[in-house]
Length: 521
Ligand code: NG1
Ligand code: MG
Image (tube, rainbow, N blue to C red; front, side):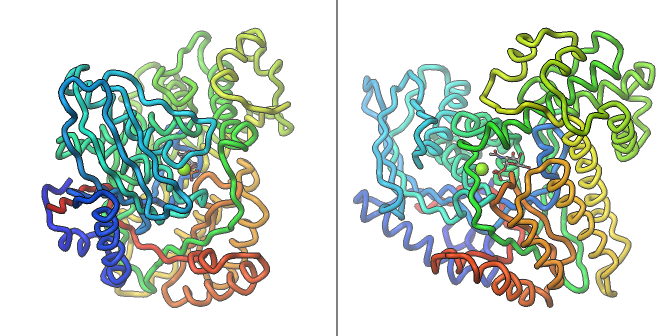
């Protein structure tokens, strides 16, 4: 993370020249509004970007690696901090948003020694700040001792990641908030891994049982690179440069304007999938591994993950000398897992609780307690076969995509169409799998993908949780205008959209930099 830097420098660093024209005035205006609102200047700006996931959908919480990239849209928090009077039992944070008509200002009063109060049942914009604050406070108390007295803060936010649009406005806001609190309290530099881990845990307090992709992408991304994020063993992130191609490749992001609110639909969508893949892992483990095999305990939101099953399965297959046997490429292991899943989980129509309980050697109440009590889900049957097949094939596609990026067989000087097509077809396979096996697409997104492909996209798919939200398209630079035009005519024209929505419906994004602090004075 950069040290103290003047505002003019980092802006030029994070934004491509073309975006500076719009980003420069935005930062200047944020700082001016801060001074107007609070009567003194801000001392720094904390920035965290949204993200688009290039490939690796709905596998982060099964602990398989994913490949997102940060986008230019971000959450900016202008901040000043003042020490609290000695002996005060609380500290105060004044919180405002440049869009004050939509996001009303609020003053938080937090006990110096107590917890941050978050009511997750209320959809309140400040909840995301509070969740970052809560995580940051825990970390500060761990580092400085439980008696640590945080500073008062004034905060003004400007976020331009579309809310509920699948580009992780929430992770951008939570990570920027946590970073702002850490920096205001003198933590500089902030450890990126600590920041990401606290943001993952904190965001669970306001939303769903998410994996860690969004927070990692927001914090660790580097300009010009995608980010390979792994979760097992432990969180790790590695930038992956996009190789030169001809024609040049662009990532086009297109909104569907179908909103899926996870807080509302969680029981039948996101959270249900988390349960289904955890059940699939437990089922495969019970049937295929020696009796009594315990899966690694850090394995995913519900304690079992397909990745955990994967490790245990090959550990036993190799006669307990797994690390030595690990010369088998992970790709090959995943192919074998696809085959054994097809043989083992044969019921297309899904499994009832009773059927799963019998396989696991549990009573139904025991099964409910272990897998169905952390958050509400609603389902008669759990589609273990389809969900596990999606996860294993998607994990495999990520590895294939990564291999292509890291070992391109071309120099970028010649025509690279075959290479571009290979990347695109992996993305198309992801979309098919999301639609058919994971059932997280929707007719509108399917339609958008067809339109974009017909207009010249190499690959088109949903990005993020799905059931609406956003799509991402790999498009040759010379076809971007055609793809935009086709979407406009064949999708957006027939929808009722505000001028602002229409303006932001399709954007071309380049891989942007991750979280950072920019000193003002
Ligand atoms: P969205 O809904 O796009 O922020 C969610 C999860 C990710 C990942 C994707 C699906 C949260 C905060 N994020 O992303 O961790 O599981 O779905 O790949 O819920
Ligand atoms: Mg989100």
